Amino acid sequence: MKIKLYGATWCQDCRRSKQYLDDKGIDYEYINLENSPDAVNEVLNINNGMQSIPTILFPNGIVLVEPSNEELQKAIDANKDFIIFRKTKN
Image 1 (spheres, rainbow, N blue to C red):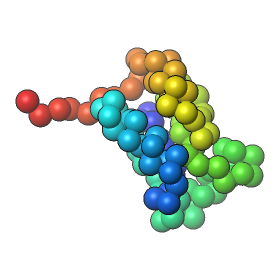
Image 2: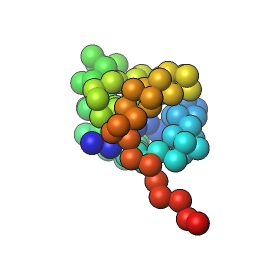
Image 3: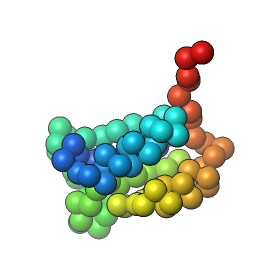
């Protein structure tokens, strides 16, 4: 399972979390709530009725909501056996 990041373009924390994962070269699925009513419902279900973003799901079951970069790194470390890294060009 790939990391899933639920967010929106207007969300500063979403942009920061995306940038952090990008800088680490981590492959993830970005799900924009602005384009998907189904994704909004998924976030509401995950967060007990709250539309809090970013909401990030990790392969081992960790769910982060509005995480700091430090919290993101801890979850990355806990998922190191499951995380897919993007291929870099030589």
